Structures are given as C-alpha cells and as structure tokens.
Length: 410
Image 1 (cartoon, helix red, strand yellow):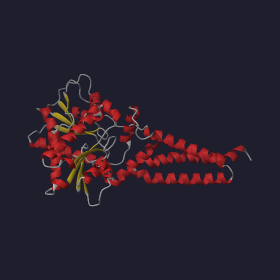
Image 2 (image 1 turned 90 degrees about the vertical axis):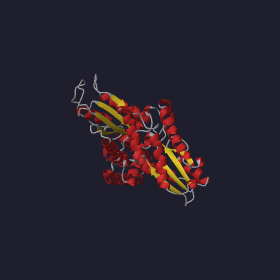
Image 3 (image 1 turned 60 degrees about the vertical axis):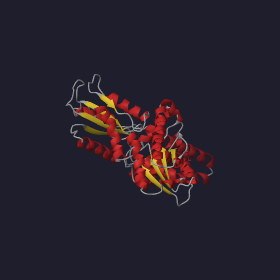
Image 4 (image 1 turned 180 degrees about the vertical axis):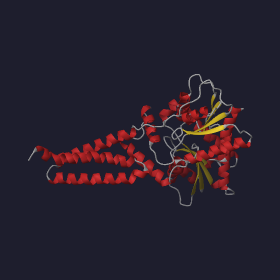
C-alpha cells in the first residue's frame, strides 16, 4: 500500500485536532448570535476527532496518535487565541472640517465622557485591558485561559440580559442638559462619549468642533484620576490640530464632590425609610486596581478610599452606628465584599445595603459582579442583602456633574 494512503488517517486525525482547537476558542469568544452555530461546529469536530482517535487506537497507533493530536489541538487553540486577543479596536474618526484659527460660533460644547461598556457582549474592552496588563507586566489571567475568561464575560451578559451602561449614561446626559436649559442656558451643546464604547471622546470632540464650538469642556464622569482619565485626555489632545485656538478644559473626576457624597446617604435613607438603623449596615464596594498600578497612578486608590471614607462620615453624622459601616473592594484588593458582610452580620446587622460606589452607571460590574461577590457571604437566611447599585441618574449625581462643569463655565 502506498505510504501516503497509510499516513492519510493520521494526517486526517491531526487536522481534526488542529481544527477542534480553533473551533473551541471560536465558541468561547464569539457573539451571542454566533454562539449556537459555533458550539455545533466545535462538538462536531470533537466527535470526528474522537472517532479518528478510536480508529487509530484500534489499529495500534495510540502511542503516536494521542500525543500528536493533543499537541495539534493545543496548537490550534493557541493560534486562534492569539488571533482573537490581537484584535484591534476599530472606529473611524470623522474628518475635521474646521480650520485651527476658526473661533467658532460662540457656544460651549460639553463632552460627556464616561468609561463605557457595550450593551451586548463584545470582548474588545477586555482585550484592550489584557493588552494593558501585559504592557505593565501585571499578572492577571494567563494567556491560555483568556478565552475562558471571555466566555465567562459572555455568560454574565446572558445572565443580566445586557448592560444598561450606555442607556443610563444617555439618560444622565439628558438630565444634565435639561438642568442647564431650566437655568436658561439654551446654547451649550452636549456630546456623549466613552472610553470603551462608541462614540469615543476624540470622535465627539471632532463633531463639536465641526458644529462650531468656541469652547470645549470635557466632563469626566469618572470617580478618580487614573489610567482611564489619562488615556481619555491623551486621545482628545491627539485629535486637536496644531495651533487650534479653541480653549479645552477638563472638569476632573468626582471623588471630591460633597454633593455626590451626600447622594449615598440620601439613597440609603430612601431605601430604609423608618426602619431601625441600628440593625442596618452599609457597604461601599470600590473597584480596586493592581498594586503595580498604584505606583503609576496612586491617585486611583487614594481617591477611592478618601471618597468612601467621606461618605461613611456622613452616615455617622446622620446616626448610623460606625461599626455597621464598611468598605470593600471588587477586585485586586482586600477585604472582598463577602468578608465585610460577614463581619457586619456578626455584629448584629440584619439588613445590608451595598453600593457599587465607584461605578457611575449600571454595568456588568454593578448588575452582576458585585452582587455575585456579596452573595458569597456565609450568613443566616433571614439577613436581607439589598443592591443599591451604581450612581445612575439620581438628581444629586447629576448635580455633582453639573457643579464640575459650572466651575469652568463661570
């Protein structure tokens, strides 16, 4: 029998192993719409691979077929992983049709700038985050496991039905614009923008300039000075033409806003009503960043802590027992939410209100991650856990954002 015919079953087996590795990664990372088809193809490739391996084993070729197939499967898995994780964030920048020395039409433009999160599953935000971790040599999820991390992200989207982040920020910006109009400002224009969604802040700035803005104010709807605010400023400054005469201002983040501090107390009081505060606990969950980033942007952790500590002082002044108030971190730092809840319950708390204190608008973090972390607390069944969520469009949150803008407009 010709040698090629003898080797054909082995070649087919190895090809199936390589394809199976590719299709597994594809299933783990594709959009929700493509998920079922990808799962079917992956299962089919595995069944064919098992059949081919079974034949090789029966023919006495197990010693070569099994390890070779495993090696080719891993090669296909890693090749497809590399392709998925090297995906670039695309988004065309509109053409700037205005000359640098054009003074504009006289109105101010507010670029409402928030973190952003796709409404439906799209891994690009986390792919960018992986890239940033790697550049800063921060250990996070090992490369071979990142497709499984993206699978888990997609599961969160399926569980929550999607992220409300974009629509909530749209609502918040509309509330902000309405507040300006009610005070008689009929000319300032508002433009939504996101770091990890569309439109980007540079796209919004180009639109504002093309619309004739004579002044640009970037409303940084973030909690702290961090790598996120730094990246946003870099993106915006890069799009401005050399010699442009339009003033550019940044409001700075909101960690030091007394108005925003007071929002947490007002919301807690609204939830509790006339209930006994001595049995109520309040947990402020921060986001957290890697310790390595603290050396680059120490303001992130310092300001998150200062922000939440100021809020706790307001609760104490309003009569809440200090021992029933706690801080926790969502990731990278301790304590985690479950431990903080358990300690409060040991002190007699029967009802815990928890906030995603660093999250500006509903997101997978506030809709899924923080509630899941809190639910891990080992506590009696009668203890009530209430998710008060992100800032959202509470009037005091809108007022805090407006105050930052007003301090520049005056």
